[in-house]
Length: 126
Image (cartoon, rainbow, N blue to C red):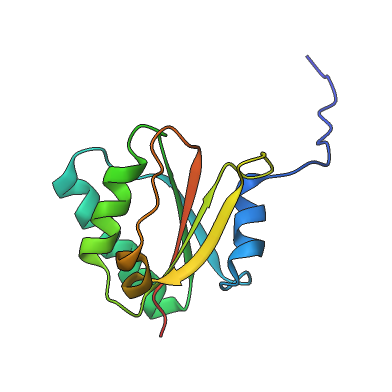
């Protein structure tokens, strides 16, 4: 079939999150879903953190709404205090939540993300 494919202009939650995060929008990587099992997820997080630090690159990932809290717990436990983390949840919805803080700051007030579509952005290039 030789049917034309025409992209339509519209919001892309990952790019909206990146724009709102204040992180490096010139150099970023979208990694999609991280592994479900904690040991593999922690290994992937450490690799993302290393890439971010080495390349001054924002790392973007997503998670299933039922696993957001577990991913956030692993991020907080395995990233340095000065690493920046943006959590963007429910983008363009009435409960939109987009915040960028250091890991140290997130540890003092961890948001509840269960069942909320969320995007996680890491920037460890400091």
